[in-house]
Amino acid sequence: MTTSDTSPRDTGDIRDARDTWDAATAHAWAALGGDPALLERVTYRPVSGGLPARLPVAELARATVGVCSLAAAELGARRSGGAVPAVRVDEGAVATAFISERHLRIDGRKPTNFAPLSGFWRAADGWVRTHANYPHHRARLLTALGLPDDGGPDELAAALAARPARAIQETVYAAGGLAVAVAEPGESEIPLGALPLIESRRVGDASPRRLGEAPLPASGVRVLDLTRVIAGPVATRTLALLGADVLRIDSPRLPEDPDAHADTGFGKRSAALDLAAPEDRRTFEALLADADVVVTGYRPGALDHFGLAPDTLLERHPGLVVAQLCAWGWSGPWAGRRGFDSLVQAATGIAAIEAKGDGDGPPGALPAQALDHGTGYLLAAAVLRALTERHDAGGGRHLRLSLAGTASWLTHGVAAAQVDGPAHDPAPWLAETASDLGTLHHARAPIATPAGPLDWARPSGRLGADTPRWL
Image (cartoon, rainbow, N blue to C red; front, side, top):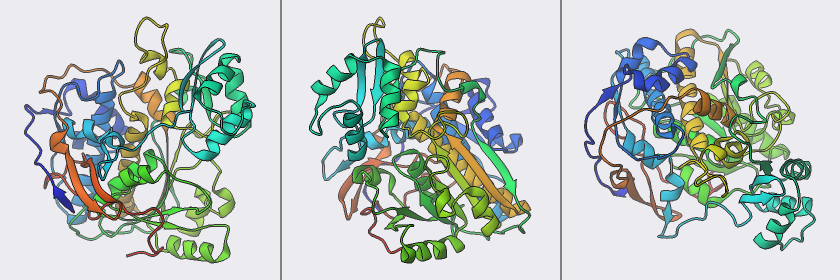
């Protein structure tokens, strides 16, 4: 697929997951239910300065890619009947992939990642973070604050400066918009300490679903992708890289950013189905009947009225792997709220920790949408491990992750490490690919395999342009 490429460079010495400084990999692997004896199969090529931050973002990033690579190696070994091979993750690849949306160019054009009304704003007693990238969220934000439809940054700034931060948060939430008060470190409104990194449970006693030997770990696995924006699409982009037949389904009535899909749509096909329309629903049910995995990225309960509640799905389709992703966790007063990485950073104290200067200026941000990307790789790893467990012991699986759970891990469970290595250079991990969208300049995949770096079988295409069928 790649038309212009460079080979990854050897970036120096190799340290393995048994080193105490890489406890994050061991923690994530344990959360996935993996055999601790396999941790010695993961090694890293370190780089310096790839994801600079006050919080241990680089450590979180490499651990999520490390366990995803190990889960892929484990599944591939189970299919072939051999031993789990060693995998070596290049931290330069990880740092590049974690900001893949910033590296993206479409025929030389740089996409806009945040709209003018998305960002930090002074409130009467602190700061708020808004998210207005989608037209409907922008409209709801303006309506909640009594501003006209054509209101711009100046009008928004004046309206927010006159109100307390938490009053803004609740007023905008009640109108269906997105704004959160920026929390001070340790003052998160979300009970971070109680949030698990990964939840996994076996459901039912369906017979083992054996997967035969194949060229890639997930070859032949059919994945229905009902996710949006970054985290979920990163997970399914990774499963596609590893050989899965990934079919993304979007509602024709719900807008999506085509540039976001250009970044995360590699390896997949994309179709539009309205689940409220009888004919489209029949098509979807036929796809579901032959699926191995369903991945959803909507708020808790948002898809239940379509018969897509996890227990309902697993009762109707024994042996299915149902993987769910949300922003704020699966219980508590915030569970049903809409959310994005930037908002979770603000509400959990991360933005305050990352602030620059003497505290008088605006809050800061992580060097990447690290909650999104990290959760995406963890979600892909959880699916791969579920497929391995189903291969061995049968049963269906229900998996749950959240951006807030990953934020909890970052702020409470990942230790900073002093790593010696060459300065990060993204060039070896960038490529150009021809597509129906134009020439895509993009980040390569960071997943390590025994055969070396993988490339996607197909570039990103137009959102909703494919026929809703399995290959």
